[in-house]
Image 1 (cartoon, helix red, strand yellow):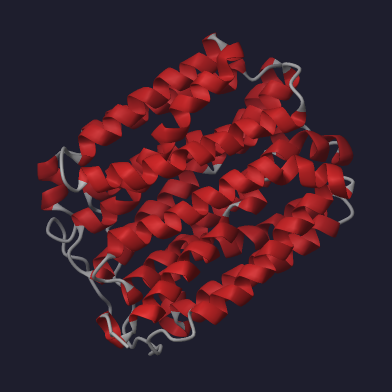
Image 2 (cartoon, rainbow, N blue to C red):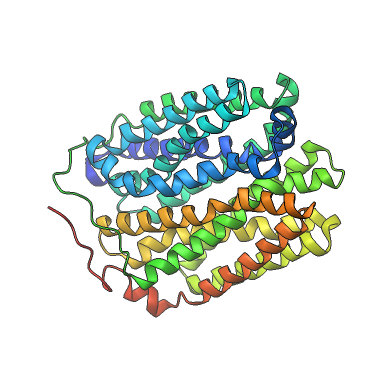
Length: 405
């Protein structure tokens, strides 16, 4: 058998890639798949738009709160067991939430789902570094594609599953059972990886004083505000315009599906021609046009989805590569990613509940969509600051990261 880096055979590397892809499938259905079901959830639990928005805000907030802990958890337990624990949390709390009797337990149990999602999202880059240090961008693209495919599929099938099973709870049970299966698959496919050794050192401190680090927080956080805002409320906005719930949910499914080819092709091009700033700024402009379209010409929703889907895929995949661009060492990459995910998700967590509150205050989603137009303009401005020189100067070279012994 041929042996690759880290002493792992090529069959083992293929298995690890498959595990990254399949494990990532479980990270968004409990959040994205809930978007098309929110009208049913609101009617059943008698929730206002602002309170219903908590079901989208809590998981995103947890992604921010728990992302910085991923390096510690991985150092103590190893990425294999740590990711498996996260999948178990998503499955277990997801099942409990699906059968919880009232609004308060449903909201409270969402924190457990968010804990699993938040830790897992920051642990997958660690798994990539452990097993694919020679091909980090490619392996990152594999699990990013898994996240987007899981998002697209859950948005597409949420309403049909709910219809077939008698309501929104049946769809959440189905998503949780999928996480159970993926938990088993993750363990099976990662069994031949490198042995875990507990690290005697604490991970490097987050680069709080780095200017470019906060630009990364801004671009990631602003993109997440747009994505989770659309995921939570775009289907509901079109249900209010008279669309069927399944047709409105298909908008989010298509948005995520259209992101897939763009998220694979454009990063490959960006490594060979042009700059990160050029591709990100172009995608941000397309996103602004699409969001304006939802406000000004809402009946052309499918046209705007054709723009916003690929634009979001390009921005998501390129932003995930930025910690690799600005850092030299694996521990620096982890610290930069911890800051970007942690502060970025904390920023974007306000989107579902804030936009829902705007809907309650104004009586329509027009004001909420205008907020997303403004956010997309800020994302464009932040992207324009990411010059080649600024990325090359980087974070590890700008302020060496301290490591506590």
